[in-house]
Image 1 (cartoon, one colour):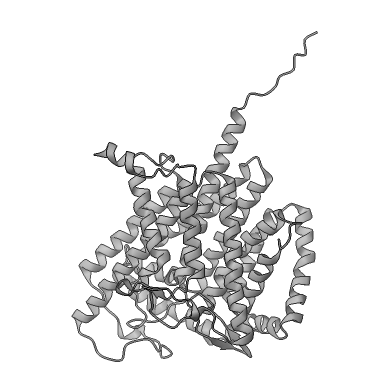
Image 2: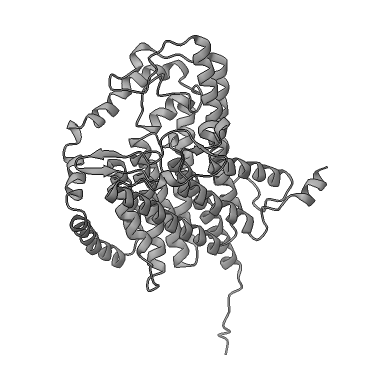
Length: 467
C-alpha cells in the first residue's frame, strides 16, 4: 500500500517546482483576493488561500509519510510547528470538554459587536464549537504553507522568486489602497469570483483626522498597513539587488507609501522594528546611505500627501491620551481573570469571540486566553525559530543570500511586534503572511547550511613548497 502511495504521490522534492507553485499561488490568493470572499458553508476559514494551505498540509503529511520529502529529521521549524500544533490541539480538546463562559465584567462599554439578545447555553456552545473548528482549519492552513515552503523550496533562486512575487503583489495591494485613499473608490469590492460569497463588507472605508483609512483587499486598515510593512524589507532586498533595472524601486515605493496611508500606529511600529533589524545587519556604508535616504523619504511623503506625516506623528505624541491605547491597556485585568479558568492549555483557538467577550488588540493576550501559557511559550519559540532561521543565513557563501536571510528576519520581527498591537491571527492576510515568512526563513536556514557544508567539503588546492 505504502509503495503504491509513493509511486502516485507527487514528490515534495520534484526540483522544488511544486512547492514553489504552491507558495506563489498561496501568495496571490492571500494578497489579491479580498479576505472576505469565502466558500459560504465554511465561513471565515473557507477562503481560497486557506483551502490551499490545508491542501498543502495534507500533501506535506502524505509526502513525509511516503518518504517523498527530501528533508529528514527534526529541523527547528518542524519542532516549533509540532510544539505549537500540540498546544492548539490540547486547547481545542480542553474547550470542548470543559466548556466556555463569559463573565459579566468582560464586556467593554465601547464594544458594538457583543450580542444584545440573551442566548441559551446550547446556543453559546454551538457558537464556540464552530469557532474552535474554524480555528483548527485556519491553523492547519498556516502550518501547511510553513512546512511546504520550509522543506520544499530547493534553491535560492526559487526563494528569490517568491520574494519578487511578494514585492509586486504587495505593490498591487498598495495601489488598490492608494486609489481608495485618493478617490474613495472601492476597487476591491469589484473583485468577485463564482462560488465565493462575502462574509462581511469588502474594502470598508474608515476615517482618521482628515484622511480616508483604507483596507484594500484586507479586512481592516490596520491589517492593510501591517501586511505592507512586513513586506517592505523583502521589497527593499529586491530593490537593492535589482538596482539599475527598470522599475526596480517601484514596489518598495508603493509599499512604503501604502503602509503609511493606512494611518496606523501598528504599521509604523512594524516598519521601525523591521528597519532596525535591517540597519543593524547592514555594513556601515549601507547604514550611512539609509540615514541619508530616510529623511528624504519622509520629506517626499510630506510633500506628496500634505498633513499625513503630521497625523502619523500626532498618533505617537498623543499616545497616552488616545482612547484606543487606554482601551488596549484596560484589557489586561479582565482578560487575566478569564485566563485563570484555563491557564495552562487554554480553551481553543478562535473561541474568544468578540460578540460574546470583547475586542482584544493584542495577539499575545489572545493566545494566552485561547491556547494558554504553554501555547504562548510555543508561539514565542516558533517566532524565535523563524527569526533566527533568517539570521542563520549569514553562514551562506553568497552575500545576496545572506541579505535575503536578514530581510526575512526583519519581516518576522515586524510581524512579532504587530502582534503586540492587534490580534494578528484574527486577520487572515496578516496571519498568512507571517506564517509564509516563517516558512521562507526556515528554507533560508536549510539552504544556507547546505551551501556552507558543500563549501566546507570541497577539496582545497594545495601548494607544494618543497624545493
